[in-house]
Image (cartoon, rainbow, N blue to C red):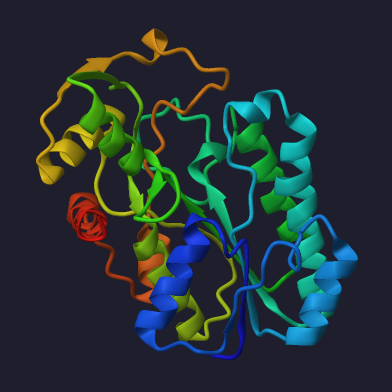
Length: 287
């Protein structure tokens, strides 16, 4: 497999990659602190890769504050585009394969059908645009890359929708949750396993891939499932997105077609609700 270097190791996906690496017995893995793996510091990145000589670099570092990005355009651009370019160049100079994590938010989301990797990307917010620009930078600068678009990421680590709902459900008797935005939740542990499966495959089928859990749901139905599985008593009301205005627009429909990644790497992807049950069990067990 070779040495694996994780950039953004302290974030949600980075922590999941660490947990999965431990469970799979992967020991040749490096999880540097952000001070040593700053994607806005090209010289520092170069020195890190020269020192560690990884076969694979997994980029989990990103600016993900979707609404704040509308005001912090330059910062989002720096992290999501320039940072990705810096890392691609460092990988190119050190013969490392890059696995770069992207998002369903690169799509406009106005067509109700499964989105595949060749569909035109037309982001409708700054976050999505900067992530798409980051993808394009990786493609332009490094041949040996896997770009994995994912959606609605959650886990027992860091802050995410599942943990927010569990907290709000314990504090309130009633909640309104958006019902007209449809996609697929993704358990970050499942994504981490898929990334290691790609590495294990030793495949050179480089390019863009889609990965989420199986199935389709709305934020409203996702919240309902969270409360049902966790046995949290709270009334959930479906509301339109227009009733909860945000600075950044969101895709109305961003369900991705995963046929390519399943066929190429022989992946068996869990259904979203099954993975949600696993995550909530872990969260409750840790309390």
